[in-house]
Image (cartoon, rainbow, N blue to C red):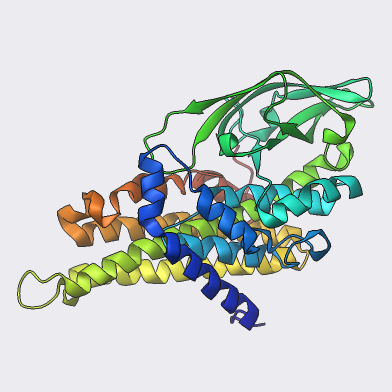
Amino acid sequence: MTFTESPERQALRAAVAELGRKYGYEYTIKAARSGGHTTELWNEAGKLGYLGVNVPEEFGGGGGGIGDLAAVCEELGAAGAGLLQMVVSPAICATIIARFGTDEQKRRWLPGFADGSLRMAFAITEPDAGSNAHKLTTTARRDGDGWVLSGRKVFISCVDESQSVLVVGRTEDAKTGKLKPALFVVPTDAPGFEYKKIEMDIIAPDYQFALFLDDVRLPADALVGSEDAALMQLFAGLNPERIMAASFAVGMGRFALDKAVEYAKTRTVWKEPIGAHQAVAHPLAVAKIELELAKLMAQKAAALYDSGDDMASGEAANMAKYAAGEAVAKAVDAAVQTHGGNGLASEYGLGALIGASRLTRIAPVSREMILNFVAQFSLGLPKSY
């Protein structure tokens, strides 16, 4: 057992941090306020191989694990240049295709994930099926050699920047007549596929969309992996999603904490800098502790996942996501409070993080559902829902 990252992982962090500082928060917030995107950062990160560190080497990736990709995500966030789509495209979609896709699907899609030239969104949430995935109504029916997909999805990130969407639908089991989950790659320019931006009170360069799938016709190979293994495939993608969400949150928390510490060291109201006062120092110390604890749990979850222990990694990934969501919300709040009125002034770069940090307690899985999971699976308590 070791609690020290490998020299290779540490070197990766240092290189990514340098790239993040090259762009920084000013670049990100400018893109967000103008309705734009952080395309230049994404493209450069892809060319440098940072977005494909978890893709197998035979397909042009780095051959690493989800822990390496999480480190990239965290360091960009800590530099104020977080990339939300990392949580989805290389983490969920590339992982599922690498583990369960056919040889042809791997050859077709993984090289694009490796260099960042391919972006794929992920669609599971529906208007009437948020936390309860058993209520999904997006369905696929066979049509000759292909499929016809119909349904609706909501709060789907980065669709406007993606060439395709990995859609969670349901197919009818020929033996039982019941619906079972299945995963389909749907091009965003497919006839019958439409998306509409959801206006959000969050200032970020990554946007949310509602999807409308009206008898979208797909070829046979749009089905990822085995129709009968979709549930296993789905959870194989959701564990990395939680690990990445935790790392994204930790990175954001580190960025806010760094700004607060610098301000507390230099802002003087009475005789000494405000950081000398415990009322200011202690909340920042608590933020540091809780962010480090969340980071450690995310690293444990990643190590378990990369070792092939999906069940144990699921428990740790949920705990990491919960801890990181709580930690970043507190860290941003403490950073804003440290700055006083300046905490809400645009030039200090903290106000926009209030909504973004609060969202991490809701998505991609709510803190309440994580508590349900831990109560039931970790503690053995009766199911409450």
